Length: 236
Image 1 (tube, one colour):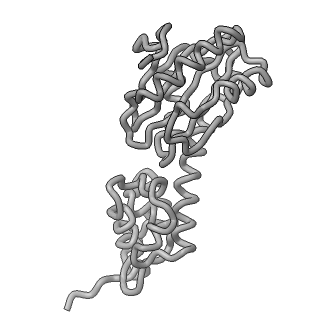
Image 2 (tube, one colour):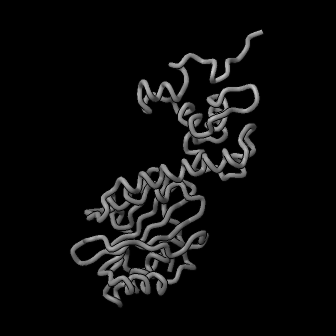
Image 3 (cartoon, helix red, strand yellow):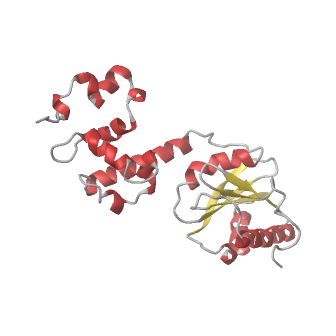
């Protein structure tokens, strides 16, 4: 019978730790990188085999570390609570590294740059998250705030919540962003309606809504680019 070698019995060049030391972390496969995190496999198998099952547990490969909840990870044979937490923390760390690699005080020159800044933060969210990005008159980024999470009907969002935050931060103009968990950034009827109401409110307060950007899966929809910031409330 063919026997499966344990990790200790493998040649050094095939062990993820030794391979990383000899060739660098970029030489490791996705499964090998995960095996370094989880360290051990299930009974009678290598950690890389268990890592491969993690990669195949959902449709998204490495993104399973971000998109699969802890409970689903624990349903994989060999993944208990500790390993599931390790994997989720690794996924979250990757998101934070991506965010930290951006400039601390960026200046945005258009919708594409704004969408790129928020893409990794929002594209993996399983619930809709509405964010407010605020700017001064010189286009300097003042910061952002989460206005709501898990809102299934955008028409329930109050313009008062948006502009209370904008006034507190002395914003000169604002940009709204929210994600579509489906991955399709096309605006819904409710998206159009709430954008129109917030735009009109901003005109009264002299804090214009410069754009509303919907984040999809590696794609986005800009109301300004698509000339959707219309004068009339859509659908009325």
